[in-house]
Length: 372
Ligand SMILES: NCc1[nH]cc(CCC(=O)O)c1CC(=O)O
Ligand SMILES: [Zn+2]
Ligand SMILES: [Zn+2]
Image 1 (cartoon, rainbow, N blue to C red):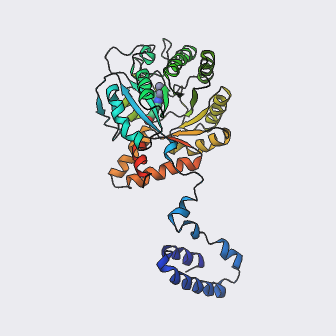
Image 2 (image 1 turned 90 degrees about the horizontal axis):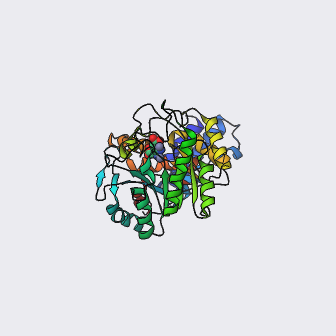
Image 3 (image 1 turned 180 degrees about the vertical axis):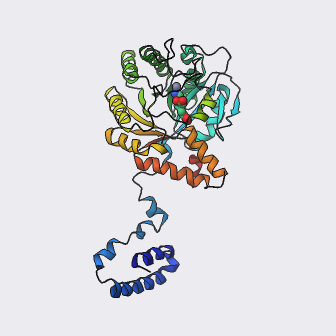
């Protein structure tokens, strides 16, 4: 057995009960080494000793630059226009669509456990709710605007993020307004999206998070907030690096926002597009974003790390999206791993990459798990 193998072997005996055994094993290892490999210096021996850093849960926790805290979590909520509804979302285990009358009782226990922030998505269910312009998005009687008002009244300490997009409200399910040939009319979309953003901000949202991905939307929203005189109290979180891919399926189920034709590849980033992501991050900083978001999270840790490098003086958020959450649940159900362990491991990866804010469907669980 080589010296390094022998030492690695010893790593399983590092509990307090094994310390004397470990010491004697170490001296045996040393004498073995001194006859077999005299070139190993004492300095080499010292620098090879790392396990002291992870022999105790607290010294293990200290190895992380950033440890998950409740304040880092934003919890996604799906609000319907059907006031008494609480409907489980089949593809998103443990998540529900909520009607307005259910929001307060649903949030109450979570707020007590330390919930600090929610991100709101509207889910119009009424049969005539959708049209080509997504008119319902900023309906003053619509679920998002009503939920913003309600949550501000009921839980003044909660930081309310309003996702802004048209896809939940357009008849075609795309994230903007379309030309007749079905392609995205960027100019009209930006105009519409920024109007919706302004409506959410006026209603009292602390943070506007446009996920539509139209070019120039951050600047347009920022200018409208300034013009309105509310830019000092409304934070702008850009989904700057949002990749197209197959991880949004359960969300589109939940929000009823699946495009009726085509896909979103012409306005969300291609999964290999690291350079485009870096350009989008720089652009959105220039246009006035206050927080940069990367989405999805776990398959895009390099992008999170790029975001932290490019936006080093800003908070960076990561969205562990519906498909990632559903995958972890499926894996746990199949016995691949333990749910809680994997929820922590995936989130720690996201923090390690550079995020300081995590949008997570695990938020209610984390609020409990972080207490013990
Ligand atoms: N613009 C819609 C939107 N806003 C947030 C998500 C994804 C969230 C998730 O999957 O959890 C999506 C889906 C999409 O772009 O199709
Ligand atoms: Zn959208
Ligand atoms: Zn959206």
